[in-house]
Amino acid sequence: MADSDNTRVCLSVTRRMLLTGMMATTTAIPFRDNALAAAEALAAKPVFDPALVLWRDWKAAYLNTAALCRKQQRLETRLAETIGFPSAEVYLPDDDVTVSVSWHGDIEELFGDDPKLADLRAEAEADLAAHQARWDEADARIGYSAAKREERAAADHEQELVDTLMAMPATTLAGVAGKLDAVLREGESFEECEEFPWPQIRSALVDLVRIAQALQPGIFMPGADRKGPYPKKRREAVCPSVIMHQRGDRVA
Image (cartoon, rainbow, N blue to C red; front, side, top):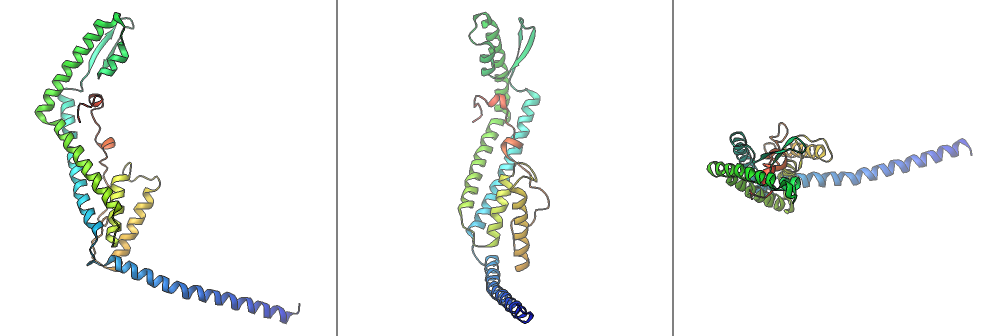
C-alpha cells in the first residue's frame, strides 16, 4: 500500500476515534448534569424525609440502650465485688482436688447419679443454693435484674426501630447518611473494625457528608460529627452477662 493510502487510512481511523470520543462526552454531560441535579434535590433541606425522622428516633433509643447497659454493668460489678458470682467449692477426695461449680449443670456433670458421691453432691447443691440466695437478696436490693430487664427491653425497641429505618426509603442525602450511621453503630463488631465492609461503609459515609455539605453548606448530616470510632455497646462485647448465673435464665 502506498504512503498516501496509509495516510488516508490513519486519518479515517483518527476521525472515527474523535467522533466516538465526542459522542461519549456528549452523552456523559447530560448524565453528569442529571446526577448533580438529583444529588442537589436529595440534599435540599425542605424535603420531608421519613428515614431521617426514624434515624432521630433510633439514635435516641440507641443512646438510651447504651446508658442502661452501663447502668446494669455497674450493678453487676457491684454484686460481683460484694457477693461474688454464685458458686460452691467441692473437694473430691479420690482426686485430691477442689473444684468450683457455678450452676446446677456443673454439679450434674461432675457427680451424675453415682450413689457414692451423693453426699458430696448434696453438699455442693446446698452451698450453691445458699450463695445463690445471697446473690438474689442483694440483687433485689440494688436492682440489678430489673436493670437488666430494662436494658433488654430498650435493646429490643432499638432493634425494631433500626429494622424499620432500613426498610424506609430515604428521600434526602441526610436520610441515606442516617442509614449508614446506624449500620456502623449497630453492625461493627468492634471499634474501627478493619474487616470488610466496615472501612468501605465509613468511607462512603464520609463521601456522602462531604458532597451534601458542598451542595448545601450547613446542612445537617448524620455522621458529620464523627471524630473518632463509634463506641460499641453490643451486649455480648460490652455488657457481659453473669454467665454462670444466667445459664438457668434467672435474669429474663
